[in-house]
Length: 406
Image 1 (cartoon, rainbow, N blue to C red):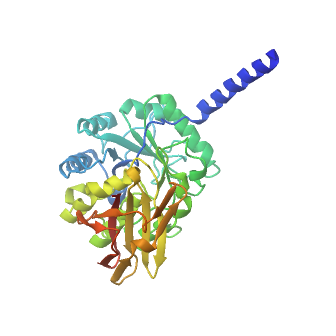
Image 2 (cartoon, one colour):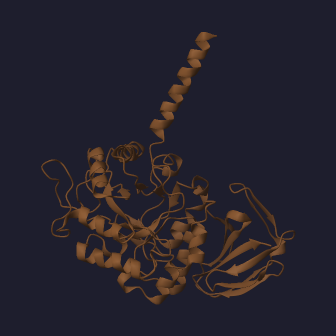
């Protein structure tokens, strides 16, 4: 009996030790999908302190912060081409003459959180010093600068194991002691949704996005994906997303050259997917339409819903698709998407439909339960599910409804 008791205690200690060593990320972060802005989509490596301070100021003036956007993230190109004599990364002195700590302090002074970029390989995608072999040193440096978010890319990683590399960096962030969102950006090549739940708060699921609605962009040896291509890859992995661990279909291209309808559809679907909302447009030059899309609090609330369920495709026929996202308080979001290049008519008789979702334990028969309807883009109440929903929907456009149980 004594032997069994001792063995049981030893097992508990071993299990606790394993759990602690495996669940190394800061669990309290990212309970809803992170929201912010990233420099890459518009500026690539052409960034500097004056430009970025203008962007911070525009972030505030535009209402983005008030709408819930929190992070201001520098992507590739912020650093010098070589580490210093102590092996530390150095902010490019021409781009950031006052150093990275001063810029981080500026971001924080505006009520925002500060994010930065590096890569799991020997060099970043743009050829700057990567983190491979310097994980703990770099994490300590970021902590000393006040970094709140690390985007970690996957270039120049020949013979490096993805799971090991990202786990090592996650442990390094934890050891540095400063809570940081850890964004795994290895493009979904190694199915991070299967292993990264305890490593980071979000993981990229596909190749890079570009500002195209339904046509990919060839970059020679690889292609940037369209909004629709990326959308189609999300449904099979929705069960892996939830509070603190999100599928990331890449950053937003709203305001970067698509039509107003396409931008609205893009934003609607990313919110239905419970995707991180990381804008990538020039905040200083936003049109009123772009601003209205990015700061629509009712649509954002669908993305930020605390239930944390990624939406799913319920219906698809002739270019018209319907997506469903269960929300807290027995509410629902429904998005009608017209992928076709022609105007279409929506006719949806609620009483003929039953919605079932095992992930959210959803089972709704509209013939038995009545819901009120609110159009989240027109911001108008439009009746109930007692009557069929009828509306014309334009090409490459979306209609987004919230259903509240009566």
